[in-house]
Amino acid sequence: MKVGMEHINSLLTNFGTTLNGTPHWRLVWSDDQLEYRKGVFNEFYGDIFLRTIKGTREVRKYNYIKERWILERYFPPEMSYNPEIPTSVFGNYEPVYVFEDKNGNFLHPTLKVVEFIVIMAEKSTPQTEKQIIDDLLLNEEKEVAEIYEALSE
Image (cartoon, rainbow, N blue to C red; front, side, top):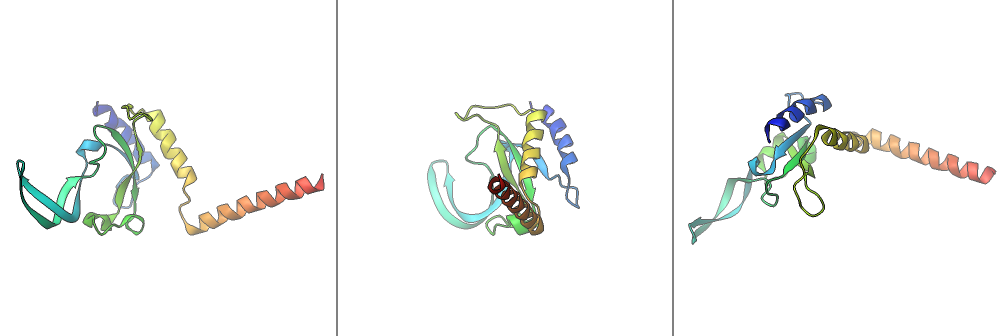
């Protein structure tokens, strides 16, 4: 099942990469994703509690999502830095879509669906402050024109 996802991931590079070649988008299996987190952890030996320690540990990234495909988007450090995740100083992948239906049932990703999600996400996400302002001004101009037209009738 994961073999077909390699093809989708190779095609996702068409949506851009960072300067070091990291793809902006990737499709991952939830159970395979690990990350280093700072925190307070309880240690056990079987069912026996040993101690509580404070430190950094490698943990499951999606401990709340089991056996699902996840479409992730890369965000640079200025948008994704989290002091609890030491490696986020280099940027981080964040989940955009979990492939399951409204009842939590597994959905198999297809290239067409993945491309649709990526295209819609990129269309709806302004990349810079200037782009946000330009979009707001354009919408304002359209509203003024519509009101002027309605008043002219």
